[in-house]
Each structure stands twice: as C-alpha cells, then as structure tokens.
Image (cartoon, rainbow, N blue to C red):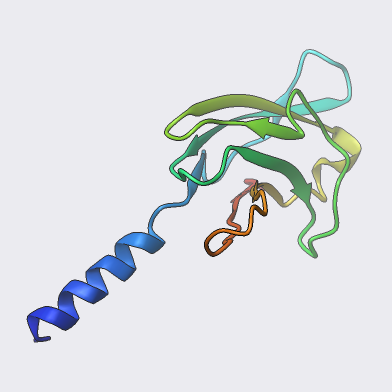
Amino acid sequence: MFPKAISATCLLFLSGQAFAHEMVPTYPKLKPSHVDGVSKVEMELFNKRKDVEFYEIGVFTEDWQPIPFVSAYRMAHVRYLGHLKFDVYIRKADADRATYVCSQSKLRGDGTGTLLASRICSKFQQ
C-alpha cells in the first residue's frame, strides 16, 4: 500500500474533487405539460460548492447544439448546500432532438484561487 504521507495527500486530492453540484433525476423522462404541444420535465439541483452560487440551465442535442426551452430559471441562484426544484418545458417538435438537460456553474473571477467550472448533465430517456 502507499506510505501514510502519500495516501493522506491522495485522499485530500480526491475529496477536493468530489465537491461539485448534483442534478436529479439522472435520466429524466419528458411528460406532457398543461400546454398543448409542449413537454416538461421536473429537475432538482443541489449545490455542494462553497465558491459558486449561480448555475446556467441548458438543453442540448446529441451533438451539443442548444435547443430552445422555457424554464423559470435560465440562470439559477442556489446557495451552498441549497436545493432548487425547477421545470423545463420543451416543444414536442424539439423533444425528439433533446438529449441532455444540463446545469453549469458560473464563476465570479475575483482573482483569488483556482477557478473550476462544473457541468452536470442528465440524459433524457428516449
């Protein structure tokens, strides 16, 4: 096994990388909404990063092309250890092309420390 000094360093490095944000469900399913011709999915975002409070929401094709969508939050404010439940609405005409719904951390460049953005994506069930 590793000497104690090396294993402690590895554990600190690995634990530092584990702090990001989460979005559930991992494989959401689009369902009909109350609006004719529009599908919706319910999502939840959990912020585990002390250095980030804003997340941008996006919907993308398999080739990472943006798809038009509607949500109460294009840019979501979620405090550290906070949760945010939100709905994403997509036209049924675009639903077959929609592959991913993603949240990306938006960083404030204050000149201190390393800036590491994180993007979490859930893949729609087809």
